[in-house]
Image (tube, rainbow over all chains, first blue to last red; front, side, top):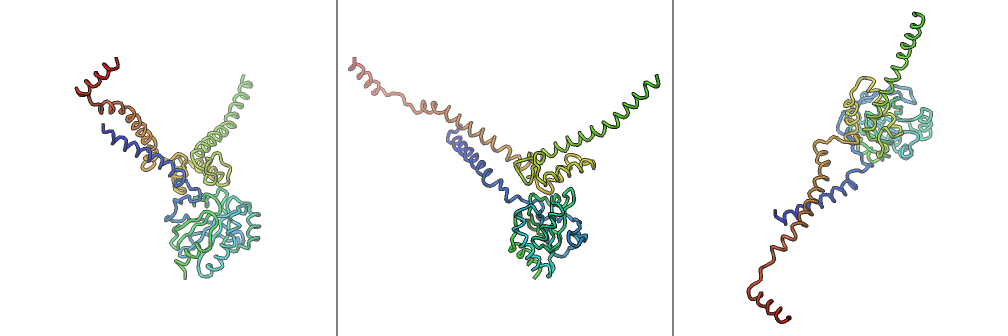
Length: 177
Length: 151
């Protein structure tokens, strides 16, 4: 057997092993960027009743408008950071036709209401059901998590962690001037 | 005799009706745990859904239980979560396609690296023998002369 060839292939195998090791540690498992299997797919329709107006809302009733669906909880620290950001974006864009929905998950109703009052949230805010079907259908991994749904009802983008106003503006301005 | 038998039969019937749902519940809970063990907790990823007490993991266990009660198979339950979270949610991804390559690559590479090292170590002496040239007559004569000089 050709000794040089075996040495070259052996060296390549060792380099490959080292490369796999570093890929696994540094690139293959970033917990902050969990890919969503739902990007580019139709957003699952849901129905819930809002906290403030006691009004039944269904995602599909907003077809034709860009929708921001934000999952939050009163006990979540990052949700406090983004509360004003989403409320400000709602004030900017809802009069022009965008829709903002906040779904509270794994939260006590009284705590959710307290959070809404404390941070002056005024968009469509509603609880998930008892099983958590809405958040499970969206593959939510933690709160806060925000889904950007286009006017056709397709999920175009997801943000894990506190969302920023620039992302919201960029997304909505594609559909509304 | 009838008097003796009837309470016993009544007891057996009562036991049957009281214990059957308990056994069914136990079997259901066992199945829920089994499936929850195969899923990764989305919030605390080092744990399985079974081990995790996070809110989302609790919701997932409830969902698994609901689906099993509805008559869904194990595969349907797992697929429900894969469809929404991706294969990432499975603690042991299926060994097909790219996954299979990733499963096999470390073993194959390690085996090949080990084979190469063994091959190189074993072939070294042979190579040394091959490079030795036989002594020429002049060299042999020189050595003999040197030996004679010493003695």
